[in-house]
Length: 65
Image (cartoon, rainbow, N blue to C red; front, side, top):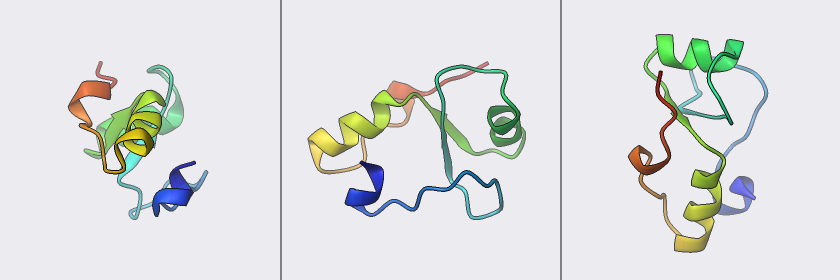
């Protein structure tokens, strides 16, 4: 769904990653994202962004420690 709106989705973590979509804390990717200042959001953020036809507020869907 995200790719239909211009996002580039990947399973790899590297310097080009800006957001990590996850259901919960504790995974290696989420830990990496938090330690490198990336934004971690719940999957509902992708759905909300699609419904709004624009990027939804990351703060509303943030997964924080």
